[in-house]
Structures are given as C-alpha cells and as structure tokens.
Length: 276
Image (tube, rainbow, N blue to C red; front, top):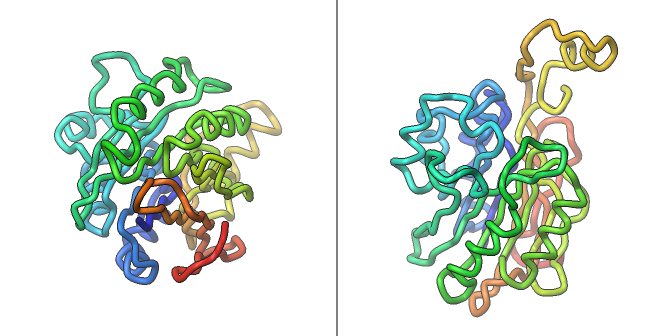
C-alpha cells in the first residue's frame, strides 16, 4: 500500500495548496491512501465542515486533528456525522467525534487511522500510550486492517520518539504533528514501523510556524500580546511523508519525506523504488 500523510494545513495557504495538489499527488505517486492533518486549516485554528469536505473531495481518505480540534464550534456535529474525520483519541469520555477510524479505501482494503495528543508541554489529557495500545490491540495490523497510521500530535520530540518505538511492529506509520517544522529523521524502525518525528506543516514558511511574524516576535521580545495570531498568506510548502507497506504484513518497506513548493528545500519520493 502506498500512503501519503500531509502535515498540519495552516490557514488558507496550506489548505488551498493541498486541495489544488492532492489529485496530482495521488496520480503521480500512485497513492492508495491519503491522510491529512487539518487542525489548523481554518485561519490557523481548527477546521470547518466546508473545509473538511473540500479536502475530502480533493482526494483525502481521512482527516486527523489535534489540540485545536474544537476551536470552531460549527465542526462538532460534523465530527459525529462523518467517520473519516478523527479527533484525538485520548480525550474524556463523551467528547464529540471519534478518536480512530477504520477507513475503507477505494480498492477495498482498510486502514486504521488513530489521532492522539501528547502530554509533555501540552494541556492535560489521558494517557496516549494506553489509548493507542487499546486501538492497536482491538484492530491488529494484518488482521483487522491492512495498514495502521498513528498521528501523534505532540510537542516533545522525546515523547514522539517513544511513541514510535512503543508502536514498532504494530503500526505501518507513526508520524508526529503539531510543531509545524519537518524533522529529518524519516526511518523504518527495527520492527517495521515507518517513523518521522514531525511531518511539518503545509503553509507559508516565511513566518513563525505559519503565523505572520509581527505578533510572535512582539510576544517573545516584550511578553506583551497585542493582536491575535494570523496565518501568513504566501506560497505554501506542502510537507508530508510517503510510506510504502508490505501487502502481507502491513509493515513499512520504505519511508520518504515530501516537501514541495514554497521556501523549503524540495524532497520528492521516488514512486518506483528506493530506501528510507
């Protein structure tokens, strides 16, 4: 299975680039599955049902969220209605939506998609390791699903790396989101799970993690907030990871970063073959 995961869509720049490019990416990389994190897609904070529908129509099979999942109250009924959009699994019982989805792909195969929040330098939430363990136990890779993808929305690189090793051999891909900067450690772990600490954002990198620079700089240098953070609206870099899995086991055979457009150096997976 060929899987593409795109990191956090940041405002109009990120979402428009993703919607524009997803059909071509599906064709050029011969993708079987696309998962997109859209928790910053609506002006940098949350997502709306209209944006989610546009991302699905462009070719996404599932959408993951994060700590901004509920910033737009309009999305709450949609989270209960559409099983393809996934909020963090380690939230209190009764939270709208669902923390995982078993998504039927176009060729009949199924991918388990799980979203979870980290606890280091983040707002309080339930144990992500226990929550993800329960999901992987209930739907084992190669038995209950053909592939399993974990989007771990967390701040600390150590916590993300620990999650990768915790899931090694039980998931096709563990990928970090939230920090909006792509990490350079894409690899297939010893047990066969593809891993990257952070996929990076899809947004304008002439910014402070996607936001117009003035307000973040003011807050860092003076400690005085004055205005709301606003997304930078310029040419976006699409950032994500490409993973290919073994049909028999669902484990990864290779992983490669994807970066296209904008200011960052380009990285393009070879759709034919190659290593990590």
